[in-house]
Image 1: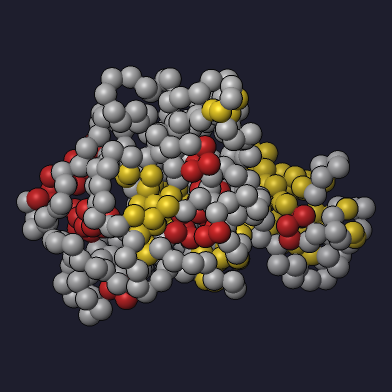
Image 2: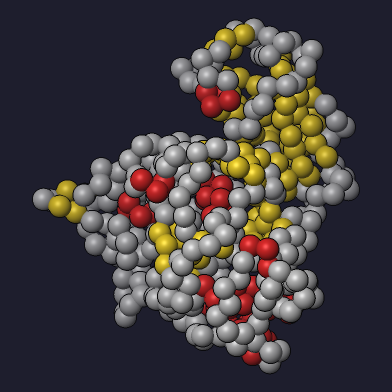
Length: 394
């Protein structure tokens, strides 16, 4: 896209001083604005794009990152980046206009320790063309807004909920393990994670998400239940992220990148195992100067996990979406569809469940945002943990 002219219109009493400029030699447009509201700590910000001088704002643009969507705090110099190459490739017009609006109605702040992932579409799968066959075909997925834990569930939080749950009718396969209170919990099965999410909901007085049948009357608290998609109250309490929710969140608003922050990886960005061959990294995008475990955390006995939040967050304020521990997702493992989807929840049948994100003992290739692993739900090991979702509005 080339912009011969940019005229920007601001709408709504909370938005002012809107500016926009295309980055030279790119298809990225930087939009900045000021946001004020004396009554709200967070607001929802939206951008509409017109290609006909403002007569209509009908371009289906969705590739925005930065201070857009829910949970935006008031302030000056807020910044949004529009990837016009994704939404309007190869186009030229002097009639492009932008409209930025803010709304404080019905936008509760994220719960403590969680980030709001905005609703909207993204391209799911291996957009670079280097991954395994099960990462293709790429397809457009639209997800509803949701909250996600900023970090993997820590051993401290696990223990707090686990102890409460044991006194309230819950039974687990494993007590959970962790190198320290601030490290991610691991050695928990998919069943453990699901029941723990229910216990977290009940402990906080929320309606649980998982039940023992489609009637959704008996809360799932014990055993290894083969929970089906229709046994879930999707708009109720804590639950595991669907695979689509996980990947949307992990991408942090970026598109076409290997990792949650860009296209290369190093120990300054994630906790993983750097693999080498013939004196150089096995994968060209692994840019560490030496091989092995991340030396900052390779101390004492296994596992070599790192405290959650040890690295910079992605665009949605989430940590450790690459490396540290694999994360359980809700979905049964299966092939991708060829068409677009809205709020997919995975196959109705299947023996294994999806893991995402790589771990402290796996190579860079497994830390790619598109990489898919699957395990039997009864698996437990020192490289596998999880984080939880709460539907928006909860």
